[in-house]
Image (cartoon, rainbow, N blue to C red):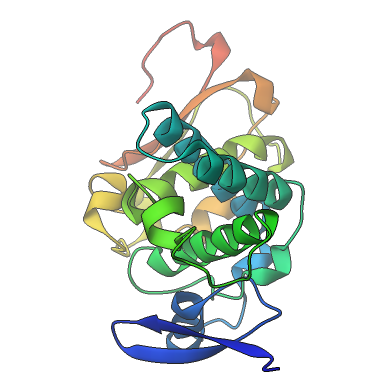
Length: 234
């Protein structure tokens, strides 16, 4: 009995170890993007956020009767497992990659699909039943799934950010230097470098008091709190 499965994409086929939940798209990314040698598994908050996004999409698709309830339920249970901290080590894609985060999105799609197949009592790679793209990523694009997951991860972990000031915090892109463009459709206009952002962003309120985060990046980033009373500080 072989200890690998064969998966296919437009470039050909690849042997995938039977004990892993990711698939060929993830393997391609690991081969192509070894930039920092820091995998996304080091950011479990982002992975959990992807699970929430994928579960919500599956539930919406089932409610609209465009996805069988059995498939949506299996995807939802797989997402619950990941949100609870399972399979975090199954996300080997590099933190820095090309394609506006497509590899991260596909890594999540493949892990969720194979976990869903396991829940259904089927072998990994049975994408004729649960497909990473046709089911887990159904009605989505990396350009909406990734920024949604990012914002959700930030929201759920805002209380962990170092606190220095109160109220609104506006960070102009001029302070970050030349923007690094990952994908224009991903955030509407452009995505600035976040190395300075993460060192500079401060928040004094708990996540439960956060109203929303404006990530349009026209020329600034604004964090607003519930006590703003509707005032626009952007």
